[in-house]
Image (cartoon, rainbow, N blue to C red; front, side, top):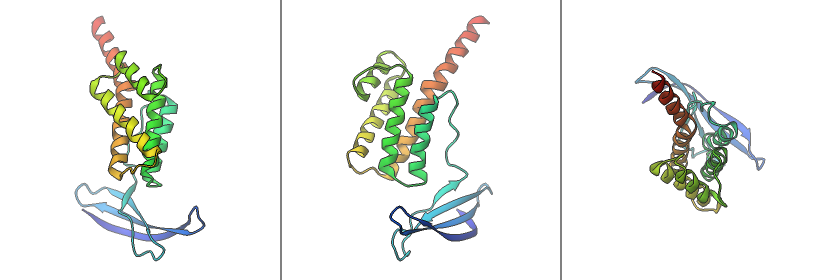
Length: 187
């Protein structure tokens, strides 16, 4: 639970020249005493219906490691923006799929499509069984989002979490493990 420390409503010009109203709340957490900024958007022209509050500050995501290639980080950051700022869940899963495709490219995977590239990574032992399964689910979820199938908020949130874990494994932990092994071999 949290206490409301302050709040307000602001109007922004929407893409179709209608005003979009955002309810902004400064909140204090009763558990840890930290503060956060929450936002809710009006869902109708009378502003009687509002979306659930989303935390906008501090960011609910940690910074991505610089060991992850820049084009992959940019794509995942765009997916995060689709989720947090636009609440565009199909766009989130499509952009997450794009980030996975870029990660495959950065790892030198070959194949005619993303599925084949993921199999290439698995066969070359750059990703293991469960990570392959995660990446393949992200591929399918992204395809569904691109072809008009429903993508829920939970699907989008899971896609972001799985992609972050996948990229940490592929670009951060695998290299760190190799450095660890080399250091231990020298001891």
